Image (cartoon, rainbow, N blue to C red):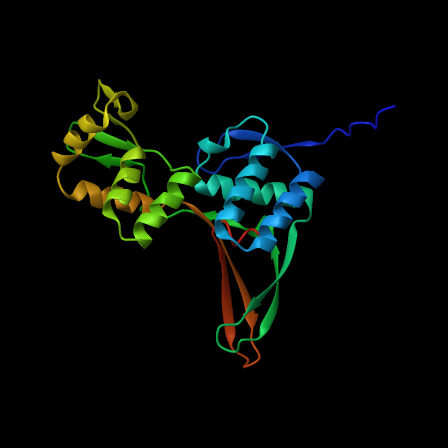
Length: 234
């Protein structure tokens, strides 16, 4: 006789980037073990790989590589809330007093912050508009690496990979239909401020962010900002 297979409840969430409805299940013991091992390792790369593995396992009708960074962070919070608890207790170290401070985060309070300057449309001239697409997590991490290492070629390559299409009123040019050489030639002939506009697209992308207030032992009002995938891996 075999042990019974326990059916897991299915939940729905709306992706912040597109409004698309996705379905997911809660963590199983298997995913809990993956998360615990990654957390104990304290290795950022291991944490990211584990997050991707767990979300990939739990998402039912969406490929994780199609998720924008803030979509991935949002789904991680939704899965955690349904699997463990909506409330996360964690400890931080106050940067001024070095004391340990106990904080509590309700994942339902975390919101997607949108910058009013943000747009995925970049006007090239009166006839053509460039449309950007959000990077998935691998591309986003590459962008961060390029900025940290100050490698313009890494940053440029990732910017180009996030250009979806250029369109006029009657023609659409999908960048995926063109070679790297054709794209490079096209980009080199654009006005210089186009790169600045592409950088602004990245800098103002929506993000999950939440502020927690506390008072340290010096009676000072302090704010701890919860932001970024590793911050939500608590």
